Image (cartoon, one colour):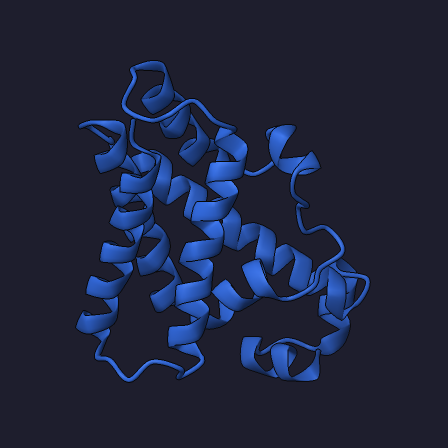
Length: 166
């Protein structure tokens, strides 16, 4: 907390007036990250078919993760008390980012573009693919350039979406 306070030019006690402990501060930072990502997704007018919209959403996730790698890690990879749990929280509509993706998947199923299946499972699987690739890249497990990683990410995303097409 002292390092955070020093970086913000405030006292550690000032932080404790707003957050009970380190975990409370990290929860608030993660929540803010999700709010920002959801706002980015909502600002974009997603035109085109469901597959095109999903690919654009995937690009926004990727851009956000590469721009804020430590925040991405906190949001999706670190254990947190208030982290949403699959399937209960997702199916209850508590994920501001996954809700947007599941809408596109449901539309694709309704218009016959995608096979009928569990749209929440598909959303979760797409997230796992996306987060896994990003984690491996950020963890230095890939010997590719940033452009090469983006291309691999987009191909992987497209292959998965092709797999659920009708």
